[in-house]
Amino acid sequence: MDKKSEEFYARLKEELAGSAEWPAIYLFKFIVPSDVDKINLVEEAFNNMGAVIETNQSKTGKYTSVSINVKMEGPDAIVQKYQQLGTIEGIISL
Image 1 (cartoon, rainbow, N blue to C red):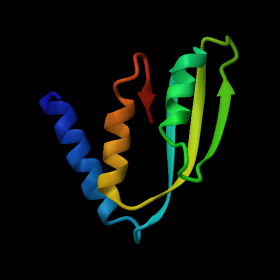
Image 2: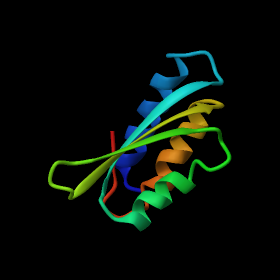
Image 3: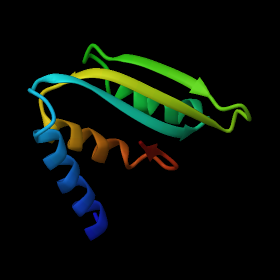
């Protein structure tokens, strides 16, 4: 992981630590190319977690937004999930 990514995740973890009582419901938002396999990878990362997942395809059909509401244990778990999903080609984390 490059220095910029490390700084981003450290800042995110710090912000999350002061923003809520943990565990709490957290909203993950991703934009992925409209490829069934890539969308499935995102959804599978939240299997067996009780997540509520919504997808919306862009007007052109080129991209799909994936919103996931899920109970997370704390900032560390959230950062780990972002890092795990960051390996999917073309994914954008919002």
